[in-house]
Length: 164
Image 1: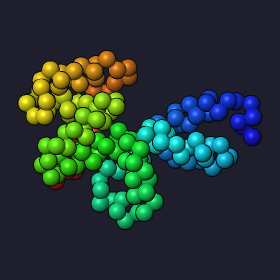
Image 2: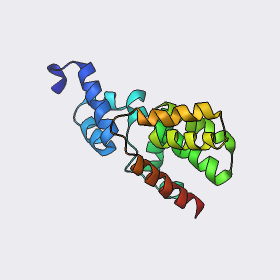
Image 3: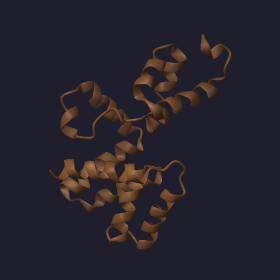
């Protein structure tokens, strides 16, 4: 048993790291022993789990119950990517300005695309004061390893899917 030599808190931190990198690796790790299974099902892990493997186009996962359950669990645990995806769709597809609140929550939790779009929309006078919007944009500059081009490209792809 791996937990015999390493404290549970250390394993939990490893699980959090693995969750941010790959949901598949997390699920493989969870299958190794009961402790890992328990740790993998904590809200903190689901809050940080990577959703990168799963497309953000809603029509894809309606036909796949396992993916749908995964996405529902992410949303229930307030995963920032999940919150952002939902708010993005509601804002751009349905035109509901109140969805900016969800994007703001995701941005506050550290979601880069959310911070960028909340900042840009705020600077254009939508949703909040320009000072608040500028704070979100400035927060992007303060992060390590930020890929602004990647963030803009990801938003461009989301918008093109959303508006086509």
